View (cartoon, rainbow, N blue to C red):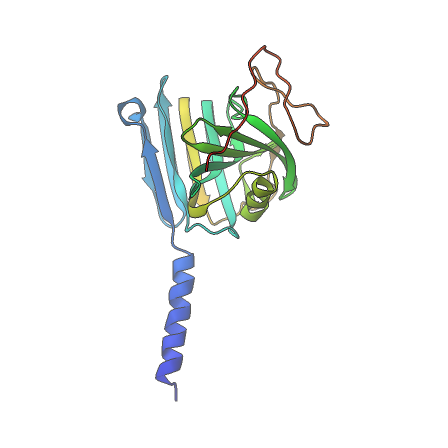
Length: 241
């Protein structure tokens, strides 16, 4: 005879498993400047995007999970960008408010090529090396973990990036939902992405472009100031309580 207590325990377990598989949607665009993009949420973790953006356009769209430091996210991606665009694991924290990116691939613009960014070293995760960067504009902190080989599918062990930021002295707050997203800033492209499914077969990787117009990193550098090919005043990251 099955007890009422066991029924409740089984129901709670099933609810927990179902909740863990629930997908959350991220779909933000900056108004009229980003009207030329189309986001479609399909079954499960799949979504598609098409976009044509001029200067000033910006969107960040995708699917993901409830925020958790120990997330291990599988994904497949048919990602075809031109111009400025990123494929990344993305989210926010609160107290402090941080916008973070684990960048898996990008088009023409390396997101670290920004005079306001400070380099915080390298770390390894999921078979590749990532560069750690941060920017603080007085209002919002941004953290970047940029893969040094571009790929369009695989596994992201989020704790490796979270711990690397913290070890570099970059504080993390309470996690909100965490998504696989495409960000488009300028240019055009399309994407068909499924979160929760790892690609079958070999995952192709290509070298990440290292040409930077604003900043550069020496091959042996592990931490500290970055070199700057242009005479730009160095801006340090300052964290305010």
